Length: 67
Image (cartoon, rainbow, N blue to C red; front, side, top):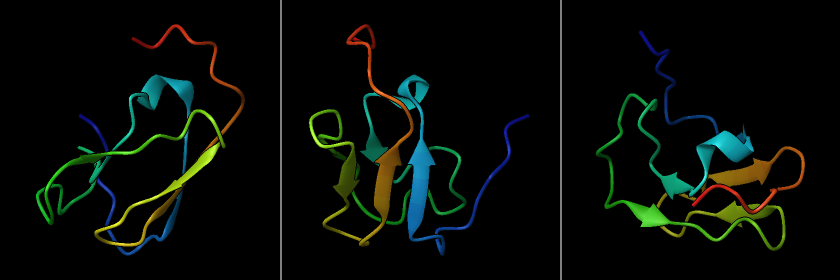
């Protein structure tokens, strides 16, 4: 069973396993709080959701094998 997190956390660290990144993420309690939007995080290492303002930070560097 996966752990669910409230959407009140405004900075979320993700790993390469979470790519491609979209917000909201399935483990968030309000996973349907706004339309799913895919966020380009690979180039800069961080991405901001235009709907809820959550900042995602990528831990480590992507290897390019997440297709």
